[in-house]
Image 1 (cartoon, rainbow, N blue to C red):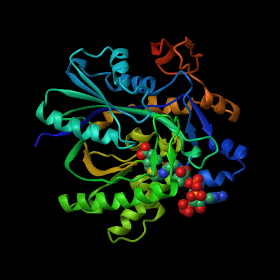
Image 2: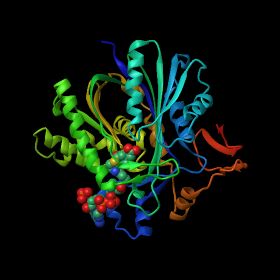
Image 3: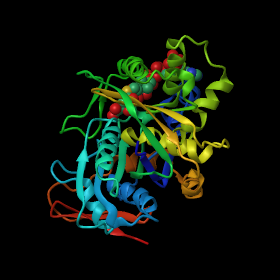
Image 4: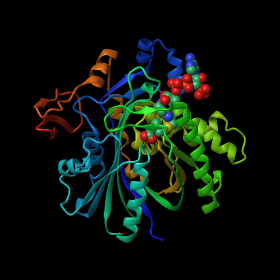
Length: 391
Ligand code: HMG
């Protein structure tokens, strides 16, 4: 059977972060609640001139570096932080990157799940058109109210991947387990700029859906827990992922994993998320980038189990096998430089970024220049967003 999957993969996040110890100090909370209770150290905070488009373009620029862009006939942009009710954010990225006119561009939404449906749709497309490629971008800004329980699980990031036949990084297995249920655990009405959430309920659903999707996947594949060498999970907070992995172990009849075994199976995939926070639909794939960048193991021919969860809710369990030679495709030093060189925000700076007001009346709103990657949002004029390539 034709192999289809990830040919190139890259990640981007804001150049600014808030140390959760600073947030804890201001909120009068024991910092251990964040670092131990949630397993989170920092949250990525977008500057006013950074949005889902600029993050996406930065991630995608690296992902298409050695790709013949004429072969990219589809750009799927997964997000729940949309900037327009009508126009797909991917069209701005298509323009900023100078992609071919002969390319479909569309935006997909279903909370943190949409990148996974984009992946599955892309794989079907490539099986039908093996000479074509798809650029899949997941880009999100996780935003809750100030001083709410969700606040410490904010974050931002984008992942871009080129999907193709005979991929150089990961070939996906065709089977999956998928579940949809109409639940109100997390949602954002059109008039709100931050999510509403039933935090504890959402965490329970995350675990229930893992169980359901795993059983379906297991029935279809007969693959056991041990048939997967590594696991990547959607990561709202790292501690929930650790709990989910122990839960999966338990429902498969095994003893609780030791810290060593837990770290070996999911540890590296959690690390970037601990540093950037939730990046909603990008988060599962940030986990994959983190695993690739940080493991010292040779991942060749290893099978990874993936758990995708999007509130509302749709969840899916699927798997893929890492392709020999994948090491040549890594962008590790670029990712690590970006994370290492982020500016640590003070609490007042964080609030200023959080509360920045964009003009909504069509008047000219010039956005101050902050540290960004190769693209920035320059202004909003006549209700139009204006982006610029800076380097
Ligand atoms: P919370 O109220 O901040 O935290 O909610 P908590 O009171 O449950 O405490 C968390 C843990 O810290 C507990 O451990 C405490 O004991 C511990 P646990 O009992 O869970 O093992 N703790 C401490 N540990 C050490 N030292 C201390 C200390 N104090 C307390 N001093 C919650 C946490 C994740 C619910 C909150 O951050 C939230 O509402 N986040 C947003 C929603 C969310 O992330 N839900 C997760 C599943 S839903 C999902 O993944 C979808 C999503 O990504 C959206 C989408 O799909 O688009 C969110």
